[in-house]
Image (tube, rainbow, N blue to C red; front, side, top):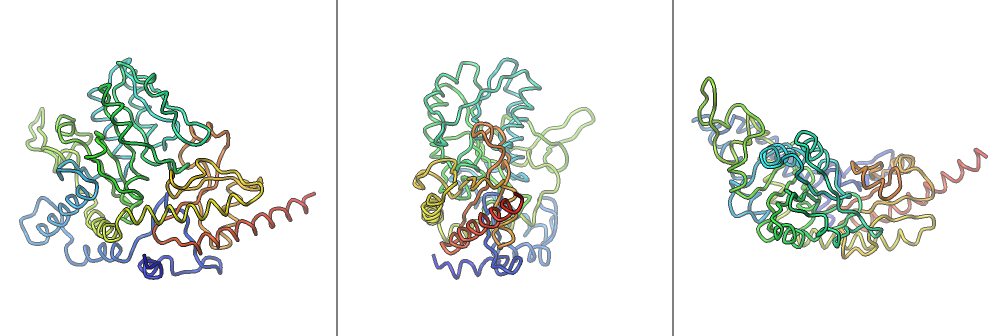
Length: 413
């Protein structure tokens, strides 16, 4: 990739923060947007704004066409064989809630079991907790080992005749661990257990083929894939989606409404009640185009090289604690750490004064923080617009933060 040209595509990066060049290292939270995505939103409102699936006039027809073309692009991007298996939601969180409430509400009963892992984002824990509380179901968790990987040997013993679904993340948003999705799917399916994969960190950073992986459901978010916020989606096997009841009722998802009952359309329409986020879905198609032009293989390789470079430099520091694998070959571009006894929030503030944007806190993964026995970590995460120069700037800022913190500690004494 021509990194100078790539950076030019992202207007937000061409600015200074507190007198320093902006170094954005929080792409696991949300990615920055290329100009073609930003321009697509403006173009929609200027040239084609109309409600979709309803009007017979020109604006409505071209908006509907563009919206459904995005669905086809997303299906192809994820390796789904049928565009009807892609349901648009607000984000991956809503996609997981959709499965928990709709499929889970129908198929999970008292005493049934739901298998999760200790490395899950809250978005893939809380919806299942709500379902378990409502239905009297039981939650089980695959533990995380000291090296940041799942205890795969324990899964056979955790799955029982009452296990209904195994929900786990493709890539940990804290540890960067890339889970062996296909192997886990096969293991679950051998026991008749369905699988939901939280792909919020997977679809953005790795080549994904849901047909090859074999998972029953795959959740994703556009804003982590160069797209706008407020758009996400669910891939589901079509036979499962067709037998699931809708989560929301309202306009557009119905066939007929009578005084006492209504009937629904097929997937995906029955899950997309009301007027959707039309402009941002259409703009999401430009993000897909951008990633396809680069290719996800190149995206992954670029992140892997940056991560290896960063890990090598970070491991040279004294008083540095890394969480997760030390080998970038088996992790995504996410590095969580603690450094020099500086509280992560203080470290994040000190780095911000040098133009470095990182994430600090529990990263919506409090279960994992308890496993790691820390209240919080600092986290850097890379994407296609990051360079080794960004890593160098981050390293320099880390050293300055330690010097500043040490001066303050000595003064306090």
